[in-house]
Image 1 (tube, rainbow, N blue to C red):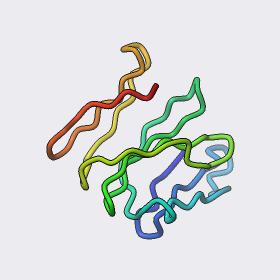
Image 2 (cartoon, rainbow, N blue to C red):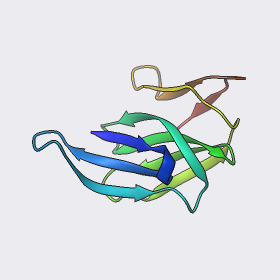
Image 3 (cartoon, rainbow, N blue to C red):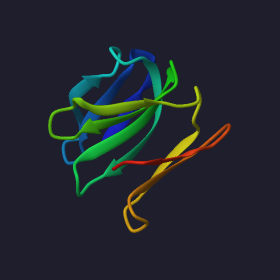
Image 4 (cartoon, helix red, strand yellow):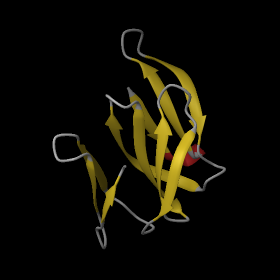
Length: 102
């Protein structure tokens, strides 16, 4: 399980069985205030949007490293990954836009 730790510009990895935080991945080098998360379990990617500056990020769930980032709007309320729909990413929020993860 993954959680957005917005106040620390990080993503937490939670062990659901033990109910403990087992790892913290910083996104501070790419910006700050990460909010929504969505998971591509098959390809081991975690997606998030950071607010300052507005960026869409993909992280490798095996390492926590940022795979890619692209500029986007500075605020997103939600992020959805739909593998059945050609792996499109749909972000909802102010001025919503679509991105392809490929």
